[in-house]
Amino acid sequence: AAIYTIDQKTWSNEKDQAIKDAAKDASKMPFEVLNGNPGYINLLDALNAWQLVLELKEALNLPAAASFKHVSPAGAAVGVELDEVLADVYDVDAKSLTPLAAAYIRARHADPKSSFGDFVALSDKVD
Image 1: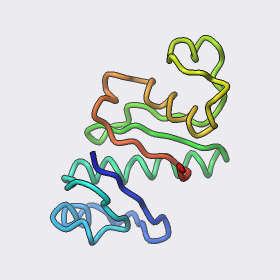
Image 2: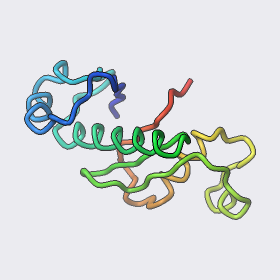
Image 3: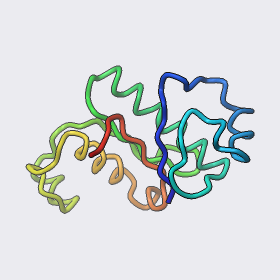
């Protein structure tokens, strides 16, 4: 799996041709590929997922996560606490989750079958 970091200051909407070019040379993109060789669809997933979490974070002022697969969102969520029922269904300890982790769990479980092998974007840094 590839890991990407995106510099939101240099990202722009002029992406169609840029993405096609970047699929050949990822050094032309406003992020660094840390592992792997992303293909065209991977780059589209990365940019679209990043745009979605960025807009959710700006609109709602909550941490956000998105799961993309084949240029379609498989799930998107913001960091609100999980109730006991969802925590049980997702098999997690809701009390130990940060808001960003809760957003990730919600996004991945929106459609777990579609999320398999997905690209995940998070609005905040993970340490």
